[in-house]
Image 1 (cartoon, rainbow, N blue to C red):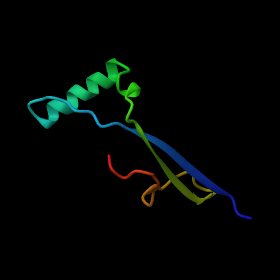
Image 2: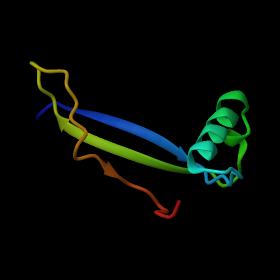
Image 3: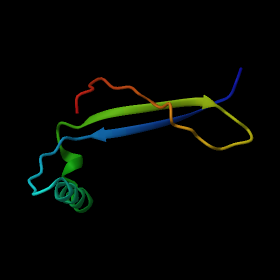
Length: 78
């Protein structure tokens, strides 16, 4: 048998409407809301998207190349 390493990332996705004058302002507003409150983590329509990457364990290197990462999800619409 071979030894493998796996990277597992769980990404939570929320769609939030923001009123702003520009895309940059909207991004700044949502970052501020996310960093200063727990409102986003309490939203009901949160979707989780797990990402899995498995690669052969290399005893000489600890690098993890995630270029071929595959996303697996039940709902592609976010």
